[in-house]
Image 1 (cartoon, rainbow, N blue to C red):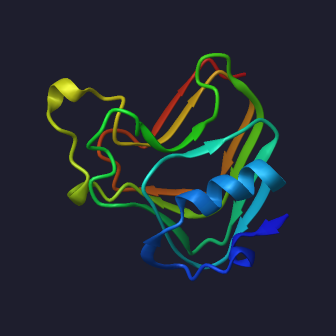
Image 2 (cartoon, one colour):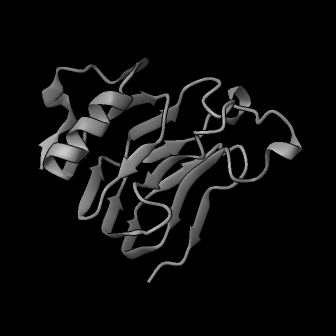
Amino acid sequence: MKNILDYGIIPDGKNDFSAYIESALKEYKNVYFPNGKYLISKPINMPSNSRIKADKNAEIIAKDNCFNYDCCYGVVTNEDLINGNENIEIDGGIFNGNNINNARLNWRHGPCTGLLFNFMGVKGLTLKNITAKNSESYHFRIGRTV
């Protein structure tokens, strides 16, 4: 399991760690988040056979204005929303949608943005010991899972 801090980042909630998180998941598949605040500006796309293990006080926070464009649907999602993925697990952590600074453009923008967790077509999805807070629309959107 790769400790995200091995990338030399400081989890202070001030810098965007999206690229580091994406790299770690693609290269190692299993990533650990120690206590801290991890700011992201784009979704964490989880590939098949990947796992996030987070300290109970590790907080992943959506950056201000993160949901003001069409490509950011959720804080965490599976990589292939059309064909699905397999064996994705998230264990622990606080996932914060920062809704006060992430309002959708308007009601026409739809419920598909501002999500914390957006999983479609995942075979073997495990979510446990998670704290979900401050989503703009929904905490969880899960469909076609087995």
